[in-house]
Image 1 (spheres, rainbow, N blue to C red):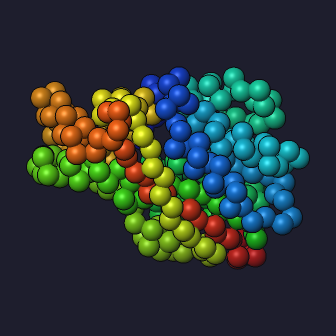
Image 2: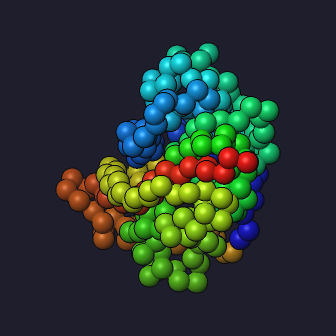
Length: 266
C-alpha cells in the first residue's frame, strides 16, 4: 500500500475533535522533547511541523514567549481545534502540506513532535526542512520508531501473517542516515520508551482510531482485516496483555533527534 497524503489528511481531520482526549502519550512526548532543547541564545523564529491540535505549540509558546512561531498542519480541522486554545493569537497557523510550505524568512528552530513518522518519504522531508532552516539553525524532533506498539504488531504477525501492514516504522539508524544525506549534522539521538495503559483491549483499539493512527500504510495491508478477524485480534490482545482490573498495556518507542545546519553558504 503506497503512502497517500490525502489518506493521512482524511484520517487526522476525522480525529481532530477526539485527538486531545486520547493523546496522553503524545503529551508526554512533547514535554520530554522540550525538556531536551539545548538552545543558547533562544530562537527568534520557530516552525512547528505537523502541529495538529497544538500540543507541542503550547509548550513552545511557554518556553519561548518572545519568539515568532509558525505552526503548520495538513489538516484544516486540526488547525481549527488548535485555534481554540487560549494562546492561539500568539501563533501564525498555516494549513499546508509541509512539503509544499515555504517562507521568505528562514527559521532558526524547526521542531516537530509525534508527526514525522507520517510524512514520507523522509528523504524529501528532511531536504525540505534543511532549506527552511537558517545557517547554524537547529532541528529538534521526536517521532515514533521501530518497536512502537510491539505487542500489537507481534500478535498480528502471529494471527494474520498474510495481512501485515504495508510498511513499518523507521529504525533510528535509518533516520540518522537520511538526515545526514540531507545535509544535517546529527548532534545527538536517543530512544525512550513510553508505556500506556488502557481500560481494556477494546478501549485501546478505539483510542488508536480516535487518534487517527488506524488505517494508512503503517496499519493496513493490501487486504484489510475483516470484522471477525478484528474481533479475534482484540480478544487475543486482552488475553495476552491484560493487567489488573482488566486493563491492557501498550508500549511506544520514541526517537529524539537534535540536528544542526552547518553549511554557512546554504
